[in-house]
Amino acid sequence: MTRLTLEHAKVIIEVAFAKGIELGLKPLSVAVLDAGGHLIAFQRANGASTLRPEIAMGKASGALALGVSSRKIGDMAAERPSFVASLGPIAPHGVIPAAGGVIVLGDDGLPIGAVGVTGDTSDNDEACALAGIAAAGLTAQG
Image 1 (tube, rainbow, N blue to C red):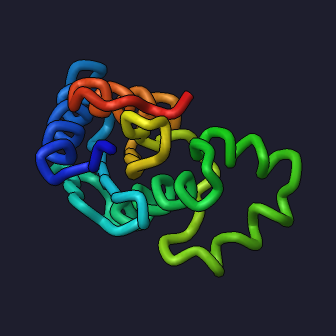
Image 2 (tube, rainbow, N blue to C red):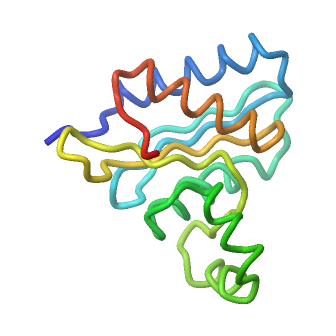
C-alpha cells in the first residue's frame, strides 16, 4: 500500500504553486492531509489571505470525511443544504463545499490522504490540486 509522505506533499505543493503562477492565479494556499485527516504539510503563498489555512484544510478533510471531492460536496450542498451545513460543526477541520479538495488514492484504490487548495476560483484551485497530485506520481479520485 502506498503512503502519502512528506516528500509527496512537498512535490504536490510546489507543483500546485507553479500551476497557479503559470495560470496567473491569485496567491494560493495548499494543505496535504494523510488518510486520518492529519496535516502533513501546508504552505501559503505571499499575499494569501488569513483564513486560507482553514479553508484548504476544510476542503481536504471534508473530502476525506465524506469520501468524495469537495466539488461533489458542493453539489450535495445544492441538493441538501441543511445536511451539508450541519457537517461543519462536527468535522474537526470543517467542511468546505467548493471544488479544490481532492482525495488521493493508493495503489490499492483506497484513500491515502487528500489535498486542499484555495485562493482563486474553485475550478482553478482544483486544477492546481490535480496537477500537484499527478506530479507526485499519485492518483486522484475521479
